[in-house]
Image (tube, helix red, strand yellow):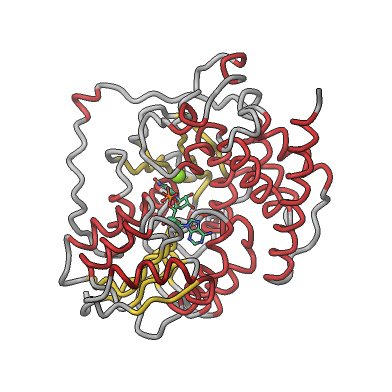
Amino acid sequence: MSGLQNLAILGATGSIGLSTLDVAARHPQRFRIFALSANERIDELAELCLRHQPRYAVVAQAVQADALGRRLKRCATEILIGPQGLERIAAHAEIDCVMAAIVGAAGLVPTLAAARAGKKLLLANKEALVMAGPIFMEAVRTHHATLLPIDSEHNAVLQCLPDSFSGDLGSHGVRRVLLTASGGPFRDAALERLQSVTPDEACAHPNWVMGRKISVDSATMMNKALEIIEAHWLFGATPEQIEVVIHPQSVVHSMVEYADGSVVAQLGNPDMRTPIAHALAYPERIEAGVGSLDLCRLGRLDFAAPDFARFPALGLGYRALKEGGTSPATLNAANEVAVRAFLERRLPFLAITAVIEAVMNELRPRPLASLDDVLDADATARRHAELQIEAMTVRP
Ligand code: NAD
Ligand code: MG
């Protein structure tokens, strides 16, 4: 490996951001924390800045910049504000590697800016790729960015593909990509039980500690729907080549099946520091702080087919992928609005996917030619989702 890499972490105070800092701090000779961003939790960001002494910190608003500035009086960190600040650090000439770990559509513009600046781009923010797939991948190709997936499933698929993988599954003899899914906290719950699910129950994932939005996505299985679309763009897999397998232990992180019948899997303890370390050091391997997998203690690994009736989000994911154009952006935006309404107790759990389906039925897919088309589809779907939520909750 050559020299010290300057690292920018977009979304440093989140679950992925903190795990990234944990791994990077184990290898100070490899990684220098050059820029950190946060939307809220300014006290936590201040602590991180004091510990890692980044050149830049980005916050959402001027009042937060003032608050952070007061905490960082003795620190040389320069404070930047808002989306322009995020774009500036994502594309900064001195940055080698960008961890895109902002949650949701808010991450799209800075993540795309990192791709357009030809960075080594570690993609946790799957929503950005789902919304803007063709535009995003075109930016990666044109500007020779190195795109490495952080999502454990896609990182596993990357590890199961040959090093020479060119983006064409067929030419490498790949038959299928098998994405594993834990099934979330309600894998076996009765449908009537799901009617009264609270935000805290939905966020209590059995295997992973994650931000609240992705935790709800895991409970509805919309997370897997987004990951189906993500797998399409990352690996060129058609909807027919992507299969979802329920695997409650979250030890097999995903698999690739080849034409000769071989199935190659990547296994490990469920700890996001593994895919993060894999991508940070790629193609080398480094210590991530993750213990050895004890298969004998585990004893068994279970697999089952997903239940498309209990988890309609899965079908919506395949539908959006097949429809193409603006459909994945519509799916993603409606989901973000519905999940927020659920977390704010304005919408029952089971209505999340009902809202998304209704919005997809209302908004026919249009072609996607530019970032403006993506942002327009996102805004339109958000408006329609809010109207759906009002209609669903105002009824007597
Ligand atoms: P999180 O909620 O813990 O953290 C989100 C981060 O984004 C925080 O630093 C927050 O300040 C920042 N942020 C939120 N809204 C913002 C906005 N409007 N503008 C700027 N910054 C904003 O989320 P997380 O669990 O770390 O997930 C981050 C991303 O990684 C998501 O896209 C998620 O799908 C993906 N991901 C997470 C995991 C996991 O284990 N947590 C696994 C796979 C993929
Ligand atoms: Mg995942």
